[in-house]
Amino acid sequence: MANAALMFTLTLASAVGLFVDDRLLMGESVWVKPLKFGFAMGVYGLTLAWLLSKLSKGRRLGWWLGTFFAVAGLLDVGAVAYAAAHGTVSHFNNNAEPVAQTVRTVFSIGVGPLLLITLIIAVLVLIQRTGDRAMARALRAGLGLASASMVVALWLSNSSGATPRTVTDANGDTVSMNGGHGIGDPDGSGMFLTNWSTTGGDLRVPHFVGLHAIQVLLLITAILGVLATSHSWLRDERVRARLVGVAALGYTGVFAVLTWQAKRGIPVTRLDQQTLIAFAGVAVFTLVTAAAVVVTARRRSASSALPTDAMPARIRSDASAHASPSPSVNSRS
Image 1 (cartoon, rainbow, N blue to C red):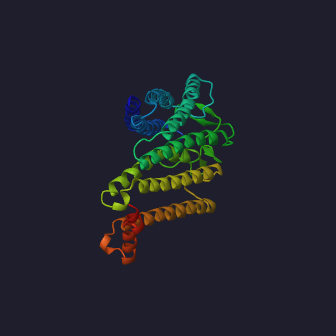
Image 2 (image 1 turned 90 degrees about the horizontal axis):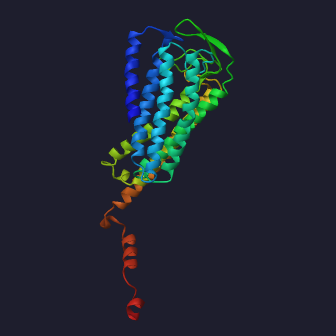
Image 3 (image 1 turned 45 degrees about the vertical axis):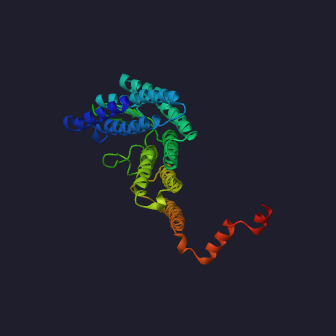
């Protein structure tokens, strides 16, 4: 919670910086990146804090994991803010000057623990129930996708094939860059606010989608819980869990397609035919599977609510025959 408070404080400070600091870094305000990182880490921190409070096993371990995650996250986002304050690039900065060296050192310390701790927490959640079936499924899938998003970011950043190049920072100084977020075009022309590349693939797209899967799946779980108050077929937690599972599979499909698209150097703003077909396949699978779950649940709910007088005579007679003791049993008794 302390981490989340600091992250949201940084977000507000960066928002102010957008208006009072006119320095530009690669075409955007130097404070855009700290704003995005602060907000994303704050939201994730709140989710993680709530999740750790739900653990029934390993609560002490969870406390320590949360503490280490908070410290590592503070180091990582702090490094981004530190570089921004100095008007220089944080990621892929290969300069030998002190700010770049400090940022690289902090990243080398902080990035690994974030991935490792997320994986351990995912295992903790996997081996126990944290809420009803729908919530447990949402948490497990969400943490799994968050871990996958971190792995994908490391994998794509190391395989982007970006050649060494130089850019100019906000101070007019030359920065030697090695690697990049973009694939096919390492820097690219970015979208508004997100700065996702519009001229090549961008590892930040699947990273963002996977990292925030847990919030999306928990929101779906909450919506299903509210709908269950007015729809009897949703009151069975097994049905809600199945629907959350379908949503998780569909979300995983979207994450996989975005990763594949980025790896091929295709920008998210100009999807090629192969990517569109893949997205269509994910959509059809998700909708058909969800429809099957809904239809089955509604039929079961309707049959269980059917009054006895409305049952066909043959079914009532069969039920009576099974319920009545046979003559042989009576004679023996």
